[in-house]
Image (tube, rainbow, N blue to C red; front, side):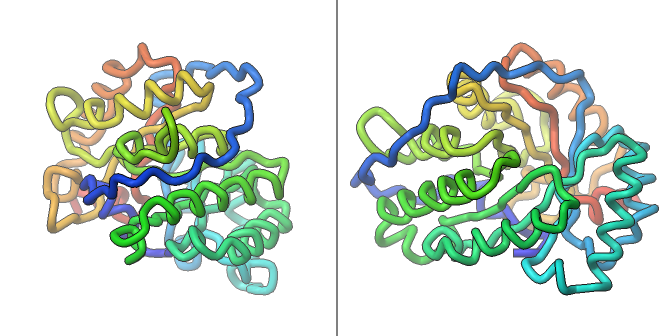
Amino acid sequence: MATPSVGAAAAFAPRRLQAPAPAVAVPPSAGMRVAPVPAGTRAMWLWNSATAVPAEVLAWARDQDVTEIFAYAPADLPTNSSLLNRMRELKRGADTAGIRLTALGGEPEWATDHTPARTWQRAVLGTGLFAGSHVDVEPYALPAWQSDQAALAQSFVQMLQTLQADSTRPLEADVPFWYGEIPTGTGTTLADQVLAQVNAVTVMSYRDTATGPNSMTDIAADMLTRGAAAGRPVRLGAETGPLEDCPHCTFAGEEPARVTTVLAEVDTAVGAYAAFNGIAVHHYESWRTMGA
């Protein structure tokens, strides 16, 4: 799903079916504690890793205080010599700058066919270039979300279980803010089930205001609360690419200075949440060209 428009559907809560899915086994959090992060902690998605110039990416990351890059890596990375060399260059520069490099990937179909997901993770992590996996799998993009949501939600959570069990490196998942409204069993929701299977989440809290009704902090509050209870770090996401159906969901068309100001306001507003793990910006290409 290597497209800059990924996650646009997450801005809206979809129609929900009422039948709950059978509960998926939830492993214990083992008493994990969520360590607070400094205000201004930033990450970013890098989807155009095949064409972006590593030196330029790293210069931008340093200027924006980015400490982690989710770099798109296809399953054929080990045999794609051009991209592999480019990723190695990015990795060397990231190490020098103290920036964490995480493998980014995902397709909606992974929610029902887990083999490609595991194949992808084994391939990209096998290169030794990445600290962990960052998956963007959106089951609500599949037709089955409208017809058999319960079974699809269960299969999605099982996919995360598969990835978690297949590697000792951390697994982080992109999630929409409304997963807490999707029932998956007695007393549980899809948000709880996802948090139980991953090491961290990034919430697609795509809004262009920091506080107040329908703001970044408002729509992310549920996941922040659930993350604290589960002992899982929760990062908030900000969109800079155009979203024609939801202009208030993105900073596209606004001045870069306003993005900086609003995100700083978010830092202050949610700093009291134990799970808050900083803000990730979607995505490098559109963020870098704002105001141009």
